[in-house]
Image 1 (cartoon, rainbow, N blue to C red):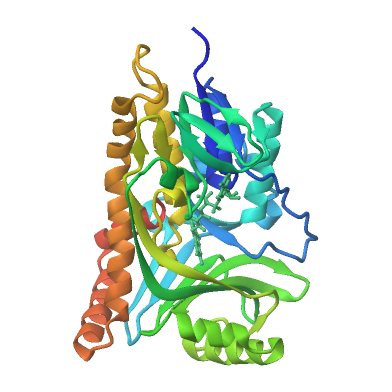
Image 2 (cartoon, rainbow, N blue to C red; image 1 turned 45 degrees about the horizontal axis):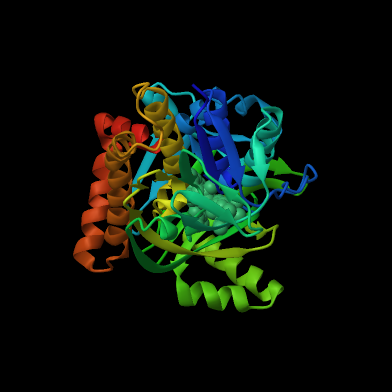
Length: 389
Ligand SMILES: Cc1cc2nc3c(=O)[nH]c(=O)nc-3n(C[C@H](O)[C@H](O)[C@H](O)COP(=O)(O)OP(=O)(O)OC[C@H]3O[C@@H](n4cnc5c(N)ncnc54)[C@H](O)[C@@H]3O)c2cc1C
């Protein structure tokens, strides 16, 4: 019997990982999406987007043979986390408390794209550098008029997924009314591989450890703030914007890392909570095409790589008489993902609601809760498991 063909639409990190995993598992995988090699950067310059890669994602990337291709001088292990509430609440999590070496790794998007694109090339995966346009009776048409008829179409084409729309897969979306503002900073004091987060009531600030540069110690910021605040900040002239941010950061962090100075361009990303029906006959969605969560736990891409892992498992363990696009096979994938996606959506949304509530009672409740968590080893181990998933 000839190999079944699977077309992955979308050439972001999730799509590249999916195509590679399928090819390694013996499927006839091909890719459809723009081919944009990430810029090669000097040792002191870092891609604007970085991800906290969980241990499960790290294991998947290792299985795909790309983890060792990363430039390890640009990858930072996270050995501990410090989470602060808006009053006296604080939780300190160490990897050793859960017998783990690291909680996560901070990796640039460009580095992940670079190694995945290289591996896709080495595996000789056919890559149509075109865009998906429409789906008619299981035939995919691209924007150049090419017609492709895969046995299964995987939609990895991001939050605005055209595949999702064409396949008529249900989709729910709620805007948080917040933006995630990202920038790299030089810190006066070293972060010592500790990721830090402050829930301040009106915003959530995360500082992720990064490699030192010739300017000094470096951290990457993800600051979730209301839309209007982000827009006002981003519209300011550069020097005023940087100065305002630096003053606010010093106040929000209480000087934990000393003075923080902006060292890269700044970007804002609108934040959403989204879910979808995941599958239709002959079609499966993965990653942002299927769901989005608040970045406060740094888990969006990890959830997407979890989709890659579970879809690969379902496809490689199916009965030989079933086709890859069979509704029964795809329903197994939907069921496998239902719980992790719901759990992550509820956790991140719940935390966002809890900390966005500015009443005195809510503030007392969350800060007392954080103090309790900090004193109970069992609860901490559970939280570390979650932080590393
Ligand atoms: C501020 C912020 C911080 C975050 N931090 C983290 C973190 O620390 N850890 C983490 O795990 N996640 C994090 N996330 C989430 C993460 O950014 C996303 O989940 C991840 O980028 C999704 O990857 P993807 O490959 O699914 O989608 P994308 O990166 O959007 O890729 C989609 C691809 O599809 C292509 N495409 C689009 N339309 C078409 C078409 N019609 N035809 C063909 N191709 C098409 C695009 O060109 C692109 O290549 C964060 C998100 C935000 C906003």
